[in-house]
Image 1 (spheres, rainbow, N blue to C red):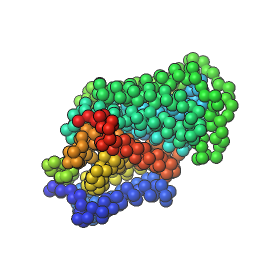
Image 2: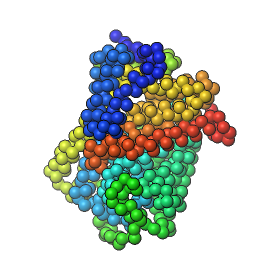
Image 3: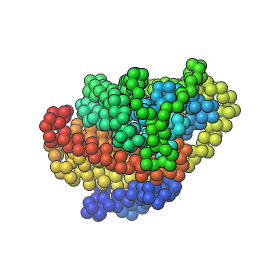
Length: 553
């Protein structure tokens, strides 16, 4: 028997909104303020979500349980599968000694930690976001930064801050393509609109990243490199999104930015090198700039061996992200399992949708086409290149699984929570609270996207969740639907750094277990500040000339 979602169960949006926020507030408070271990905090948040869904929103208990179960399966595949296999590759490279050579080779480009951070976290991370998304860039870059000697907080928090501007076009444009497909936006128009919002922040984020790491003075010491990096990413991002399409925006922009920065560093280096990998104001080791140390030179053969596993990873991730290849693998094996007792039995109703429609709940076991499978195969190939024998590979894999077991459990519980809030309608209640902001809607509608990603861990999921509501609200207020659909995605990218799933990925990649609360507290200000800046920019595009001339109607 079908159950219809209710978005204001108490006839008072203030009370309903407060209740809807309880599960997320409980989980974040447990992590950030009470220093409870992540998997326990996630379990408490999930329990709160079940209680709110069943007793406040009237969701049948069996449906609530099955929605949580469905989310847990999604947590294992694709998210947990990515985390497990990228940490496996990282472990192999560390034990093999490749990371030390990797560090030395980067020092050959520049010894300055600020510039290494820019190259790895922003440029390299953007490539992985464009090719794979879903936690891959943070897992890769945080792991590399730890290998380069960065502190756990620096590697985790700064990788999360860097992984913002590329997110809207991540995984070969999946968030935008999904937004257009599910909610009836014109794909090229909404892609172009996002491409008229995010480039300004692609220019800003490199400056923001280094300011967060080293402070304002140290940031200004390398402003030419920051400008080169930001502009060489922002300009291709605008051009590709407006004239080609969403699929290759991040990949092209990342390659151009990475190449431009490396070439620029051949002719320019800062007068004073920052050689401490610790963050200003957060670590006990020295933060002052130091004299450069001698660069360790390795043979070309050693450099090739050290970089080969990461080149292999890049190739595999890119190939696995190609739609044609995914479709081919899915045709071979991707069984679908409708969740009995949940699939098409929950009705979404206006004002979230124009006409009532059932919510699908089908779990696809797309093991072959999952990005994590590509990462696993790349790790195996890389292990053979690093001269591991088969028994050593299996042994390292089992040890990696044991290392990340609690992180996998946390991801399962957090995805269960996020999925339950979606099917119970509590997340929609939060969205409607933002939608009632009238003339301030461009600002708060942008923050709606931020909330969506913070809750679900995915810009794609946030677009599915709130994309239709953005369109309806924009039409009612006389705004461009493309503007607000794009704002949902652009604002959402700033929520990526505080979503619990990404934080767990970062803490796992750096092996800084049980410090998820520290990471959350560090990145929260940056997340809300950048989201508000996006909201202000969207408001200017809605009402103030010449920004209004940028809007695609």
